[in-house]
Amino acid sequence: MIEIYLTSYFKKAFRKLPKNIKEKVEEKEKIFKINPFDVVLNMHKLHGKYKNYWSFSVDNSYRVMFQFLNATKTKAAFIIIGTHEIYK
Image (cartoon, rainbow, N blue to C red; front, side):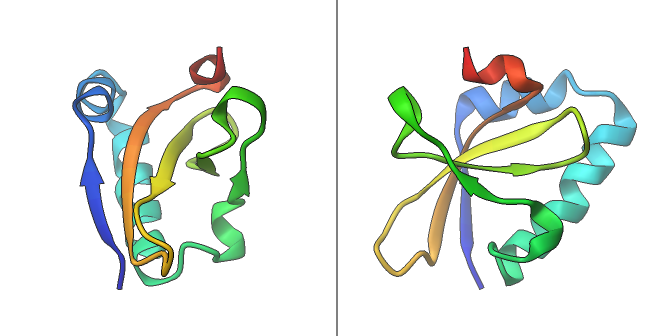
C-alpha cells in the first residue's frame, strides 16, 4: 500500500472543491493507495516543466498532480488538484 502525503497547495485546493468532487477524489485515492497504475485512474507521466510529476483523473475535468517520493513508488505526494488549469 502506498503512503500519501498532501502538500499545503493540495489541501487548500481540495477545501474549495464541490462536495461531489471531494467524494470522487476520496474514491480515487483509495484505488491509488492499492494500485496507482490501475487503469481506472487514467494515470500518466507529465512532460515539459512538469516532467518529474504524474497525474491521474478524478473525472473528465479534475486531475490530481502528484510525485513519487522514492524509486520503489511506495510513497507519493499529492501536489495539487484542479482542472487542466493546474498545468499552466
